[in-house]
Amino acid sequence: MAPEHPADPTNPEAGLETPPAAGTPRAPGGREHTGARSRRWRRALISAGVTLAVLAGAAGTAWAVSAQRDATAAPEAADPPRTSPAPRPTATPSPSPTADPTAEPAAEPVPAPAPTPAAAAGIDDPNSISVVVNKQRPLNPAGFAPADLAYPEVPNSSGQPLRYEAAVALERMYAEASGAGLPFAIVSGYRGFDMQQQLFNSYAANYGVASAETFSARPGHSEHQTGLAVDISECQGCALSEAFGATPQGLWARENAHRFGFILRYDQGQQPVVGYVYEPWHFRYVGVEIASDMRARGIINLEEYFGLPAAPTY
Image (cartoon, rainbow, N blue to C red; front, side, top):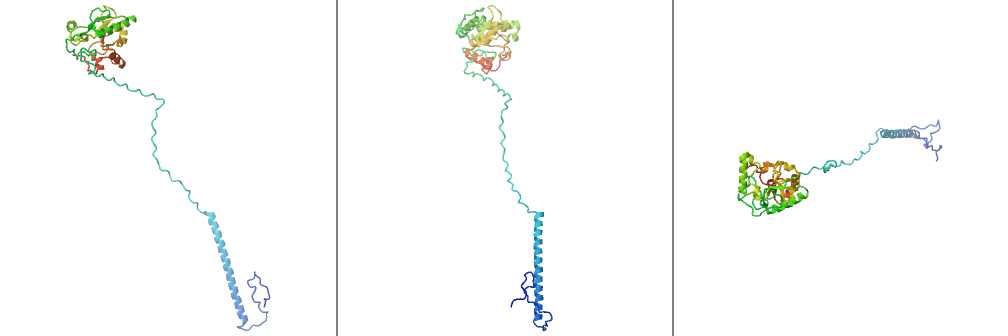
């Protein structure tokens, strides 16, 4: 049997049995009592359900609002940025030194000239043109006399000869000097042991031994005894003088003698080494090879050239 009223979905009591009309008595403990109690129970359940639904909805809304507030107030922290690991330190090579283009290059030191080996030069042999004679190195034998003396074709006030090789070289030197308008003359050439003895004794008597030994050699120690030394002047009959070094002939001889095998043996300032005062007239024949080598290397005396000790005294 259909209900008298259609079911109302908005009415929680819709579809329930319609209550009896007013004034219709119901017996106690009958159907009326039971129905009323059922209805009250259902209404209580419905009311509790509605309350729970409302509370649940309110709780959901509150949770949503709280979540939204938390999201707004404290956004989720972003992942920390990734950083590349610090590079390991590597050794930096020291820069190679570079030349300063503006700096002048340092001058290279000039090595001292190496002495010529004495053993190969014949410095002890009186017959050798490279023999070295000084106050520490006498001729051996002391009375040595060369066997090849000759008279050069050069004006010669003393008439003294030279060894043949030296005489020929002096003739060439004289010819070239004369061609330049600067002829010279021989004052002294070869002097033997006895003549040197007489000459030294005369000087010692006149000037004293100590003074004589500064410009004259004892016999056996004289280069004139070798036949390889010659004293020259600017004219025949002219005396020997230091002034010769400043004459045109003296200057020419200094600059050109090496080309003919001669050296200026007792140069200025060399007395502590060679033992004699400056004698710009005294030229010694040693051959073109040695004379030119000494000139090229800037070596002034034979002692230095051959690596020998100085000989200032006997």
